[in-house]
Image (cartoon, rainbow, N blue to C red; front, side, top):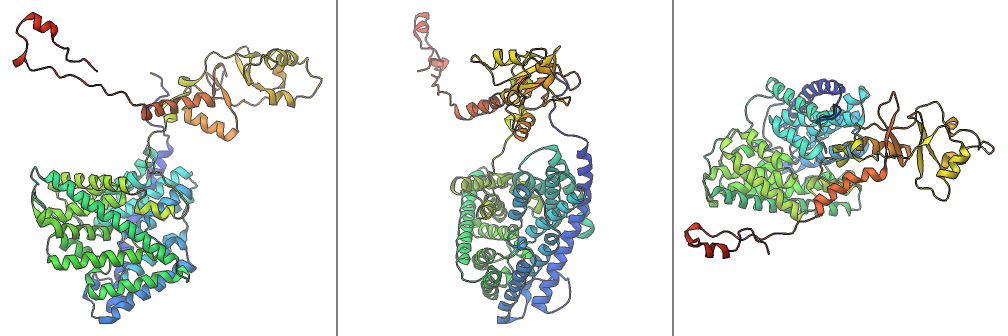
Length: 603
């Protein structure tokens, strides 16, 4: 076995970014705690006119009709911050993080780290029907990105720290470190390598251990339900279909309403205030739809609300959430999805066969999240960590998977990627191991190479190798087996006239020629060819001896991809197999046995 071949490509820099990620986990936890206190501060200010960070629900306000003004004032402030501060503070939080990762070299500005939590705290504290997770993901990501920029790390390492900070913030808000890692894998990283997975896992673990010091311990919504019966699998699948349809409907209407806002003849700065009018009206009729609503989610999971109240909450929450989010204000999508999913589960739960009716709000909650975010494993584990209900884990996975399949088949893009697509960027969510990463140069190179001896004169080279019988575009030039460089028509044309009698080896400079090594991945060589503009490079045994062992070209680098193409596209012909009859009816004599049709005969 070759020593250069290993499971992963990494180096000691991994230790450095992992240590930085651990510090980022602490910083993101502190930022999450600060954001939650800031939301409570503005909530008390807007709805109770007090300077306090007490955890009071906006539903307890006594403002009467004046409650409509609170979200409008908040919307005006958010619009002003976005217009004169940073437009990046608008939106869900997660799409902006994805856009920075894929199209912004994972760079975020200090403005975002400061203004995003401020704008989100004002939007949510004034009654906006959002969660704190989107803003903290953006804020934590900004912290990770800024730390990486301070240490002058590469773009790939910056991405790892951005995502680590983002999901560490999610861990701090919800106490769900494993689900946060899965969120990174399914939504944010767009790769699965030690250089990204290890910093993310360390940041989430550190945030998980730090959280009890600031935000408390235990599941956010403790719950214990009974195991589902055998029919529970079918009921979970039905729940997934219903939740998938809910995800499809919410996402579709969100962007229809956003299109309507885009047609307004006024600057987008005023849109959050206009959307907040709907929030205020909805909050007047259903006060429990205002703000984050974690208390409402807990009541839905515990089945503490009457059905008519649940129906009203789900309808009003859906309407005001769609309008407010479409207006371009700042806020997260997870908490509203949890509330609406749990509400639908509470409504249909009594009619779902197969087990404890109390489990269906939880199952629908996870399914709605899995369908909307296109992250089914994260959704199932997220719901499990929120409640600690191990009995529900299997139906959670089944429902989330079905909802995911439903939206994948019916929706071109998710609620997150649609936002980015409208900005002119397309994101392909499927990713796998690059075939060029799996293969090495020694597997695809041409070993039988026609070389030119360094002592051959330029005239002979022109006549024998670049005349009418020319077979190749370039040839390696060697002296006693040692590579000097590659000669092609371009090099020959650069040589001044009158030097035809000089040996070809005298035209090569002292610097080392561009080479490839047998143990390099095809991906590395392909990148080098793209950077240098070369079509082929010689392959040498090692960098010291420069002994030629082969040559690799762009054509050779296509071979791994053609293998993957055949695996994906070529379909084997289906073979029908005759099933051997039971021995109970087997022939009783050798003549009958001889005439029996073989069991594996195909037609």
